[in-house]
Length: 300
Image (cartoon, rainbow, N blue to C red; front, side, top):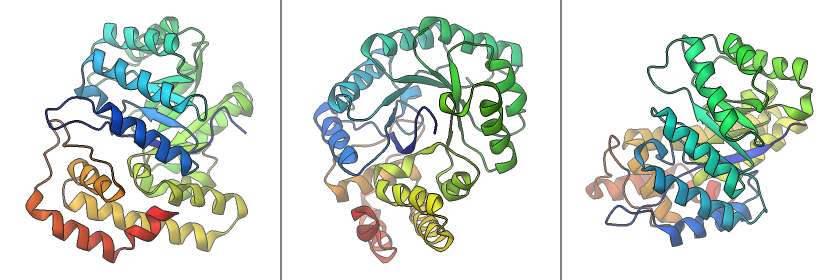
């Protein structure tokens, strides 16, 4: 057991045609995903385009999702930003409006470990009653050494780890069990393409972009891992990865928002630096998705 479990959408943020947060669509998406049996929501992360939104927009999205979820599932608010003062304000706001946890990327250009620790410590002070998750992208950073230092912050309760290094991933899982006890430590996998393998290595759950449109696939991947059904888990992972590859071929963020229209959600266009989806390619995207069994997977 861990603090949080299951398949969590890194919730996308729908925008109107004039590039405002589309609150009615956001509310509908929350209800739809809860009905699919998700474990919770991760809001204003990379998929949610939080770093490309104003502080006030991010506060609005967090408030709307918490209100619409109404305690049915937990909500983790991503508060990371290059401006530490803004991140602190977002952390305090998330606690005030009832987020179940906060999380943050390591801000770009925070290269010194001591600076990274200071940044997370400031978030911990701003939301001193709310669990705090780091968000690690893998790479050259020694993630295990960093997590050892972050564990001195009283509210640190785990991590979202987005990377292919399952050895390092497992070490973070074991680090938490060693120092906090497994009931207080959450390690989410963040690489959708390796969800099944991370589940085998002790992931509490997964957070990812593609859970916006095929959440049931990942719910079933976790069930397969728990049951020891290797064939089922592998099959689902490979089918999900085929859809992911298709979207990457069309420009992932724009194609994902276009794909959501197949489920009845008008999510608008992504913000820069992502490029808008080219409507001239709509027919080809839909053809490829249909050939890969999108409707069947989305129905799970």
